[in-house]
Length: 274
Image (cartoon, helix red, strand yellow):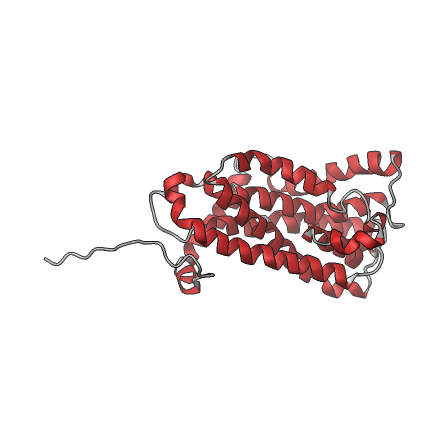
């Protein structure tokens, strides 16, 4: 009786993405996304409502402390709308980056037991968190209706912003998770990184507070273009600065590209250090 043997070995670490392999395992990717969504809200009472409650509470706090008390500029739009329009993309970015950055550690058990494209793991949170993003976005539309804010022609560029947001969050997550599986200190630093990153982004203050000579440098933070883009496209905060948006998009694309290459270059070590 003939016996066959299947040998699983690392591929070329310099490859980008093996599309044919990813397509063969597409059902697994769907399962992982579905599991990510269901596990998050398992045994909760309010379920997906937390996607709205979290930015809503943050909006109230920011409005009271940064708006009413500190009186930070708000580009002549209501403070609640000003902050909530920034918190919708920021919450997506921060939660996706944190979960993608911990994805290999959280799934370390299955890394040693079965073969599948490991790169699925950091890509899953960005897709799963879109449910939260769209729930929060619907509430943002309701808030715009309440304040009688009508978007201008810039809204036609709105679909571009979630793409940049996803690339930035997943690209950063790829770097963090590949480092975190080997150096567990990274996992402890991710929460601190998110806090610093928020205050380095125009969430609680407008881009207009940054001196003009530093704004292009500031745009190296990919969330600068995304957050300002949301405010401009939806609530008419200033005009869309294509230079800043282009820089943020370029940085996001660089993060996802280099993140994939780095992830692939160290993938063969995952099972040994997990």
